[in-house]
Image 1: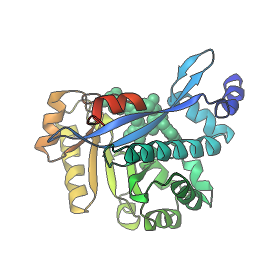
Image 2: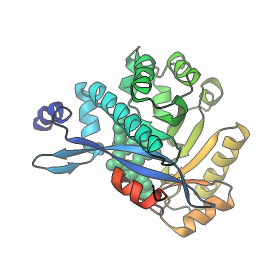
Image 3: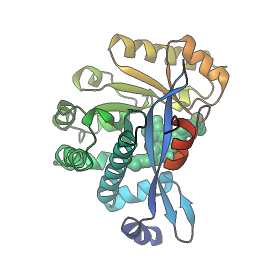
Image 4: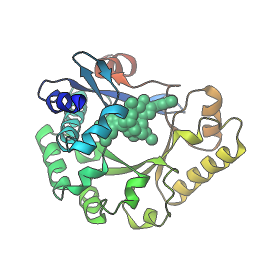
Length: 253
Ligand code: G
Ligand code: G
Ligand code: MN
Ligand code: NA
């Protein structure tokens, strides 16, 4: 309850900020995208992880305002980077299923793109596979978003216990292989087989694929052997403050 009261004020008091985790093309180490991840700088408790406060935001309805703030800030930052001559790459933003309860979701996301000046192809929305089973993720909202040029990525792919039929019904551009399949991939042949199969399926469906949670060179080598060239994980970089992304990953500007 205490945290809930604090969280309601966190946005207006400018206590929220975004970290960005680079997504890397394994062949040449180029940054090809970033995932925006929200953090809360709590006045007495220090930095609080979204794993703690996103569930509170979802239970209390704060997620609407918070989700809008995250979208606007991620688009603003990416446009600023593009404008300053940084790499022309997209930003990925995580959505909660509640955000799909807003019938005007697509309209206000398009408004944020107009306000910030970010072109729609540079915004990627991450929805989880389990949200797809939730009837709230309507194909009409997804179609409206993708018709405007925004891209859709399926987060935590492989963990949703769902049928695969939505992959042909819904406009999905990218699969993000969940890191639970990567963790033991060097020893576990079942994980390796599942990952290889997801990569192959993505290729056959003309979808992009990225592996999450790569922490070691050995894991990276297996992904590359299986033709997955897009990588997100601590091996390349943890989520970073915006300044640190510039310092570590931008060519001198
Ligand atoms: O960054 P970290 O590993 O602490 O993130 C924990 C969880 O919080 C992840 O599942 C991530 O997807 C989620 N998360 C991070 N930022 C956001 C956000 O802006 N919106 C939503 N809905 N979830 C987020
Ligand atoms: O649920 P989602 O995939 O959005 O969660 C993203 C979170 O995963 C990020 O907040 C980040 O902190 C975490 N993460 C990213 N790369 C790695 C990694 O290599 N290992 C582990 N354990 N976690 C990671
Ligand atoms: Mn994600
Ligand atoms: Na994920």
